[in-house]
Image (cartoon, rainbow, N blue to C red):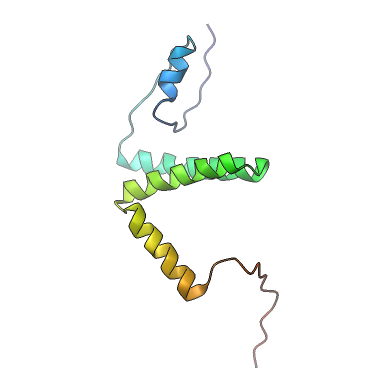
Length: 106
């Protein structure tokens, strides 16, 4: 028997998919504090995968983790979108592709 250890947060249907593949997953339901810790780790993991692959599918994974974090924090997605829009109005977005090189002070 071969055992592979993961100890990482997975999407809800992953255990079912593993079982359909003829394997036996061992899962644990996390408490609040551990769940937040694993969400943060998952966000870092998905970001690294995006940076390595430059894939739109990896961006979708990042957004899914962000949605889970918002739900954990009790923040509605529409409220989050309003925060994003407000920041874009007040500070701009990234459409102009600007790099701040230097700031001179008198």
